[in-house]
Image (tube, rainbow, N blue to C red; front, side, top):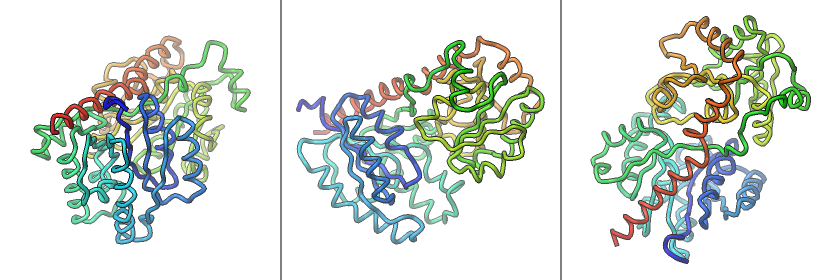
Length: 400
């Protein structure tokens, strides 16, 4: 196998309730057109990992689940489980032919620490994990935060290339570590397949709504994803209520936990709350008229590239989203089809007036789609990933 076609080994970790491997990272790896394997440290049950394996292999990639203890079993058991994965990783890394290693996030570095890594290494930070854990995933002790920060910097030191989702995160990491003064640090945002997420054709939407058993003849404001507090469910509810009252918009809530969604949105007029599969989401977005994607701004959110916004834009939907999240202020600041809500409070009247114009105009869909393709598409993401891999492999060859 020529060196330019060296196999990619993608190391990640996830619990049983996320679909990042099959829904996000495997499609990106497959789009690169190179032999690739996914190693997933996971505490998901065998039934779940079997489904992930089938989905990944359907894309032409190899997959191996490495079982670890769940965080709820205690910090000691979790860390011990991570360290016990070392022999699996060394076996995969030392198996011929040589590999280009991509490590997603901080925690998978724990079993790699005692190992001598040969060949190209990329560290995909996938956000600012130590800071996010401190803000959202807590409580995290000061010692735990220091440990994660130290692990983050060690990962940067041992990698040929460091990847971030945003320019802000890249700048922050450079300020944190002198090691990055000589390391390429590249912005590589996540992306969705623009062939899967696309706008509805003229005249298609009513037929699609009937098929999905959604109301016709009225605008639909779609809210999607987790109802965690960082996604501002109360503020989202207030906005959805105003859109329903002032613009006769029907709130559509797509959530994995419909019981929790009902707590926040159940009393909205004519609300539709559903839990749907990931393969059904694009159809529901094509049937919708406007997307709402609010999120609490915080220090760690500088490293976030919100794919929900991208899915809405790729589907041609005007979007109401939050300022100070990742690079959104820079990427979408003057976009016609985007309303950025300020963290110091934007009056609902302003949002409603903008939404009225957006819903009455047919000109927004094309602009939204182009924004989505530029900033959130799989093709944009994979081309930047390919460039990062090329640079890492060149630097590894130069290192000998």
